[in-house]
Image (tube, rainbow, N blue to C red; front, side, top):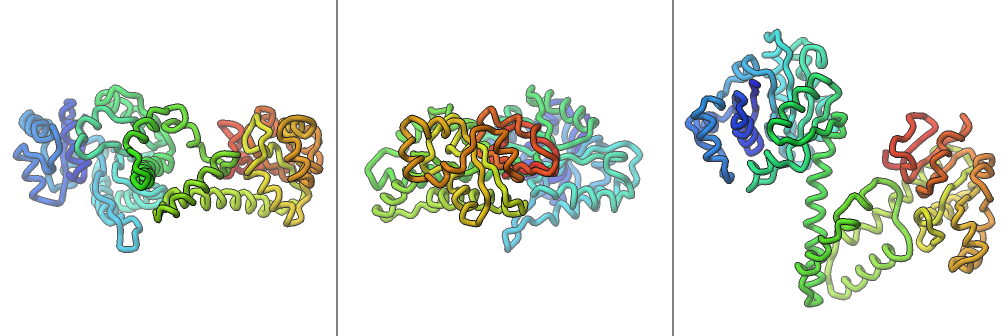
Amino acid sequence: MKISIFGLGYVGSVSAACLANNGHYVIGVDSNKTKVDLINSGRSVIVEPQLKELTARVVSSGHLRATQDVGDAILNSQLSFICVGTPSKKNSSLDLQYVERLCEEIGQILKEKNEYHIIACRSTMFPGSIRNVVIPILEKYSDKCEGKDFSVCINPEFMKEGSAVYDYYNPPKNVVGTSCQRVRDTLSELNQLCTHMPTIFLDIEEAEILKYTNNIWHALKVGFANEIGNVCKSLNIDSHQVMDVFCQDTTLNLSPYYLKPGFAFGGSCLPKDLCAFLYESQNLNLNLPIIGSVLPSNKLQIDTALNMVVEQGNKRVGVLGFGFKANTDDLRESPIVELIERLIGKGYELTLFDKNVSEAKLYGANRDYILNHIPHISQLMVGSIQELLEASDTIVIGNNAHEFETVLDDVRHDQVIIDLVRIRKSPPESKQYSGICW
């Protein structure tokens, strides 16, 4: 395949050499003459293991060359990768000037080109940048239509400095944001040859935010580990030993568990242990900004749910599930109970149903808690989902008990559902339905 790569920095130079090493004919493009000359002389523009030898080999074989001429690159390739920088402005916003300027130049050349062209963005950009910035500029300067005359997609990279060549051929995932079948076919073939891994296709905006999600998670992990380490040092505990064992848990700690957007956490452990840990850390004169922000963040999610109910304007509200999670009658520190209390305080007419809590009201360890601590709430409970539906105009799904899945099919046309747990993997596309994080 004939490929052009715009921007010969870290991402671009590694991508160019690796693609050329796979037998593609690659043209690297950069406005910096020094970089162009270095590539054409078979030398790498950055220090990166294996890249020096790889660049020399693919330039010598004729599979990689570099130029400052955008027209040369576009007219002599089928697929282009945009790898230019997207630095931060002084106000911390994203600076897309290099992307914008490049798209103007590419658009002008596309105007002269008869063949279909695919443009894949590897530069990190905030969701909406492709549709609202890149595509409009390309269409304006080419006088052509995206999706008909050319296509734009996003293909985020997941390389680490110091192991970029290895990471290129062994990525954690291949992701392409597109709705175009032609792009799907082209990028699938390209990625399969390079990495022997399937390609995950997402909407453009999903792929745009995925790169941010990855990087922010990595930064969060570093900060979290450092805060735990600071506490460990103050207590004369080996933090590396602690974190080594912590990371061995791939069921809860390093897994998809707990990483599903939804409602606030609660229960008898997490809130209590967070509070105790922060209290003892203050006694050690330690500031833990990441760990200290967890409970305020959790509180904001309850505020969000409350605002969603208020915005509907219905006074009759039914809550399905108010144990802090499904399959339990434990109401201690339940965020749903807090939501219920706040709705009662605002004058809403509440109807509640939770099979496990109903049983606990009759017998079980939580009977005294229900009858003595929240008797006003227990009096609002009904015996079936159907009773709740008949008495409510807004229905809040508070936990993911299996029996709540069918509620989406049973609501009246004048009722609305607020789903705090994503009760179905594929939620309905309906004005009656709102998810808290989706």
